[in-house]
Length: 392
Image (cartoon, rainbow, N blue to C red; front, side):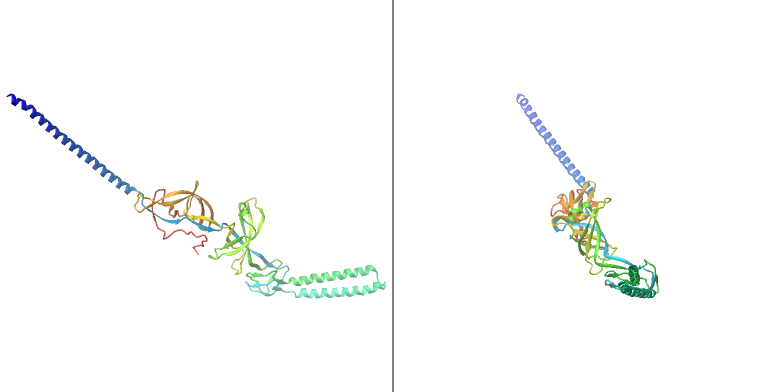
């Protein structure tokens, strides 16, 4: 009995240890399963969150791009001018008369002094002959009276009266000769005639227009510049003129004169340029676009004007940058820029970009900072320093 009683406690202790180990194992398994469930739930939740974010992410926007680069260009001043003939006049009559003959055709090139129109001058020529005869008679009388005066047959007063009469007759003859000359209209200078509707037999009054005459080579261009550009222009500077009438053609000339007076209302100064016009393509009254070469050529960092977005707080461009978060993708970043002169489709960048930067040149309205983009340069805005109108 004593031996059996002594072993029972040992048996109970062993049982308790086994039960304790079993409970610990079960608790550990439960904790492990709970941890696996928590981790699994977080993984699933992260997956669904990432999937939802991916579905709600901004889609890629298609844009066109251009590369910022250095270029050698001539600083220029742009202006719009009106063409004017070096000499231009509407030929009119000084006297009335009936048209006897028209000696030109519309559009003729004529030299200075070329006869254009003859007016009927028969009566005027007859009057001229009568006055010439009277003047000749007065001269004979004066010479005869000089001889008589030397013989003291007439007085000095009579001789003076005869001299005055001779001068009066010669003056009347000269006036009539001038009147007859006015019956013949001549070109006052060389140039090109316009269109006329004048016909023989037509009666002209004083001041009636006969035809226009314009000297076309060279041709003058009047334009105006702000007063701050005065320091950049001098007489003799080269100008290039283009006209919408002749797309692709450029006409070269030079500054001929600068008005010494600035308009107090507009603060602009008038400038005159002479442009070569050998082909007679430019005519007075047309308007043209002028580029004045102002200063020495510069090595400028340029980008297309279409890449610049102008805002009240400054000018900006969108830079295209790689984005590691998007597989093979790119995003955009907005950057402020300081701009300089412009030339054609290009503008000079003074700060905000560097050589080699890729900027968005089309599609800015669809993007903002961080927008994923897809580049398609099959169609993009022009980046030409000397563009020509595309609609022609």
